Image: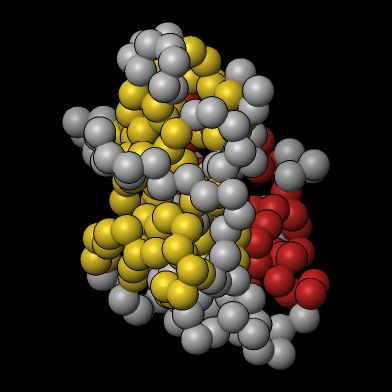
Amino acid sequence: MSKKTSAFVGLLLAAAMIAFAIFAASVGFSWFTNSVGASATGMSVSAKGNLEIRAVRGGANIAVMQPSADMKHFGSEKLTGIRPGESGRFTFYVYDPGRTEFDFSYVLSVTNNEFFPGDTKNKGFYADTTEDMQKKALQHINAHLLFFRKKNADGTYSGWIPGGQSEQVKATAQEQAVTVYWVWVPWYSDIFESGALIAEKDRADIAAYYGSKEHLSEMFESGENSGDGYNKADYIIGTTLRHMCFDLTVQEE
């Protein structure tokens, strides 16, 4: 039996007016459960199957059948804003009521928050943006905002979790904690030159992946492998995406 969980971390974005997008806005991080009549402002969770998803250890099952605007506010963590260079982490707990050892996988990606309260008409995008712009913005943000399993003592990130790809987990407890670190990589050089942001092996893997012909247009605007192409992609994100979410899918193996 499978279980699918979609989790959204709502991030309010303001449009940038410079070559690399800068975002200055309050950010809500919230978990929700299904409740008719309550508005959602940050994170929602949907699920199918027997696994439970929890926001805190020993907490209530936050999974609902389908994300919607009518979900109960479960809790919040205030952040200061989101911009290139911003980073954070979140932890979720996967609970199996019948087993203490089990396997599951999860997939992470970034998408538009169509459930942002009072602004659902444009489904998280700025008004008057075209479908092509919206598609490009989502491709670019998924290449610029990266997920990792670990943040090291020296401040570098390692254990890259490619967005949209399955990450396998072997649970060793009935309630398995999963912590994910994220960072919006601010500069071209952080990926395509040796730097202090990402551990070298992971940096090289990311550079090879997004430097390939197949994935070049995801990282760069107009497929231009350069700092200018990277900044132009950030600009597309900032002028297109108004409300952004993390999308999390958990699958029982």
